[in-house]
Amino acid sequence: MTHGRACAARIRERAAQEGWPLIHIAAQIATCCQVPPLRAWRLAHGMPLEEAAQRLIEICAEAGLRQPKLHKGDLSKYELGRTPVPVWMIDPLCRLYRARPDWLGFGGDYSEIPPGEEPENTQPATPFHTPFPLDKPDHGGHRKSHSLSFSGIGGSDEMRRRELLHQLAVTTGLVLTPSHLVAIEQTRQRLHEATTRTGIPADILDRLEGLIPGYERRFYELAPIPRLGALLTDFDEVTRWLGHRLPVMTQRRLWRVAAHLADLAADTLRVLGQYQGAAAWLATARMAADEAGDRPLATWIRSFQAVHAISCENDPTRGLRYAQEAQGFARNPSPGLMLALDQEALAHAKLGNETAARAALDRAKDALEHVPENQQRSALWGFQEHKLHGATSHVMTILGRTREARAAQPEIFRHFPKSSFTWIRTKLDQATCLIHDGDLDAGCASAARTLLDLSPEYRTPLVLNRAREVLLLLPEKHRKRPAATELRDILVSAQRA
Picture 1 (cartoon, rainbow, N blue to C red):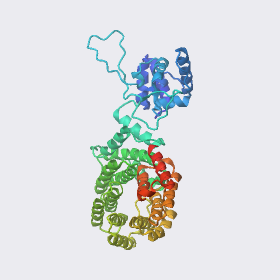
Picture 2: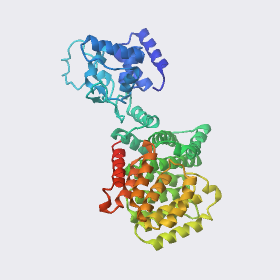
Picture 3: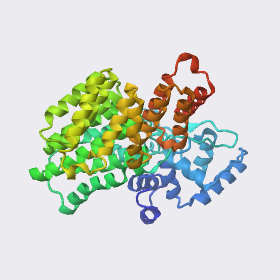
Picture 4: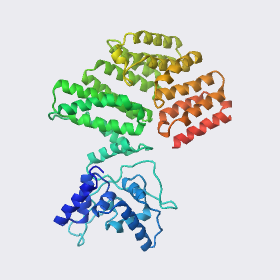
């Protein structure tokens, strides 16, 4: 809840003075405090969670219904849509709050009564939008849900969109629902819909630019889903300010922030397996970098489009074109040029051209010496020597040159955080090298151990796809051996989770 219980209390005070009906109070609380209808009605009654849960148990007993094992935490999850509300509990909730089901967010009033034929004392249609999720009760009257639907969020479409982004930022173990994906896409499109207004305070501009070094420091500390929510919330604010009429240099500073945030959003969506959305965000990042007039950043994003084409679309030919475009776009040695060369090497390796892959890596080694030191330092948009080791490990693993791949890997483990995709990919490169060297069981065991050592939120679709590639390297006759079966079982369990 945005404003806290004090705001709801002030609304009840005003309602008492002006004689508002309960439905008006609940609607005002839902809109002002940005809470779902079920919570708004409890706050309209001024009822604490613990009291409401106890009263529900008593109402169920009085009505001869099953006795729910209900605590205040359970009721809070119902209110926020984190646990579906059992169908049989709708009537007790209506009795408790003296309301209709549609007022509490369970469906809507779709009756069609001709004008002039309304019965006396007809109550108004629900002022709330979007039904609450319903589910069949289990033996305890509860069923946990691992996804948050676009449910129970009152107010305008804009309010509901921002609430969904907030859910991403604060919720762990969340599955991206269609509603979340719509909110993500709407957030991206807002940048293109910015209209002319005026002004931005200097302190706000400084704060927005300060977001970028903040993400550089803590990017890998954030699990993908909360990271995505934080990125989109910040991007949303930048987009709103870009809608103002601003001096050209101020606009460029904001476009640069937008490009960085869009690039990170694309990377996060890529890791989460949302490849189409990632491609769209990369296109937005590219447009924003071009608007900012930041050639090194624009080069980087063009190179990252090569990353996406190769690792997500499995299209090394297209990735090679992006990498070569980025090299042609770069005027001077930069991290973006380094990334383009590393992706060119990877594309050639996947296409089976070892000579061209080695030539691209050699050009990258030469170019790194000419990249300004201040551009190398960034953990996200810089390119240090250990990133080149990461490229070498992956390219040589694909080519089956296991000795050279292993020689590059210690530097990766020394410098990259364990939650980064490069670190995880290199651990799976180790497993692949074992298989290339004929130690099939050890390769499967290594890949399985890598997955088990990861926290569940980091077993993302991109990681699972990379681990599945290890399994597919096995000859058919070895895929039923215990080590291979264990790896397959872990993949299946992780996919279901």
